[in-house]
Image 1 (cartoon, rainbow, N blue to C red):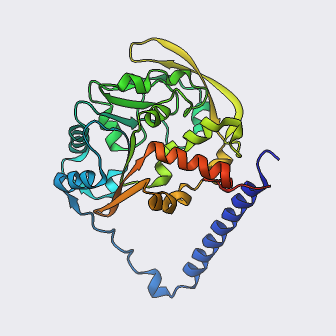
Image 2: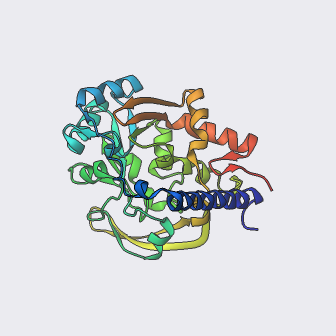
Image 3: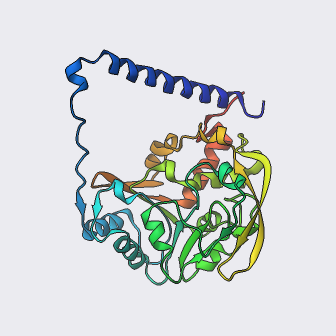
Length: 308
């Protein structure tokens, strides 16, 4: 078997639950009384308007301060209607970390499976490639002064006095989260991960421990195939970047929420309710140390308890 037995049991167990839920929904629909079927669907939940003072207070409570290096994952519409939109949020974060801080945005050019994206063999051009990671990242790409890492699937955009230190060697990594990646540099800088309206399942830094441990990680998260993708940097210079792709099968087993209570109890994750959602902040170094400890000691990962 390519994977430990627990992975297959986890996968097919989830598949069975999804099938049961689907059957239950169809039965409920079939057994509904005719007058119930004609009812209008419930209206969408109201989206509150959130002013910048509320966001600023949340960031202050979470401990984001001047000089911080922070990676921002965002789904701002999940919070509500933010006054000023992406521009106001971008400016607020920049003002909060100040001139000595650094702000990183994941600007991945795909929204589905990494494998499908790499298999298309599309040239990655750092000057023109879009971001599929939400409105805030799309806005950030339009702002002068950012430096974008050269990676065909997991490119990162950095602003700040050390922006080049975070992104300059990403194209040398054989996997997206390897030791010279922006995700590794964030840990080295004792940085933070900001979650704006999104949860742990949007936190790609979970993969950092997989790449750092390599063959010592108990799950084979990558397929064997190596992709060599043409990439063009911001100066127009072309490189061939070699990278591996996450196994789509394994991706369906992943559940980062398994660590939510662990992180909260350890003080690694802090959250504040805002609008219809929440804002959270993670200590990147403490997160990596915690993941390694649970992996080595208990063989517990975002893919569950590993055995077999």
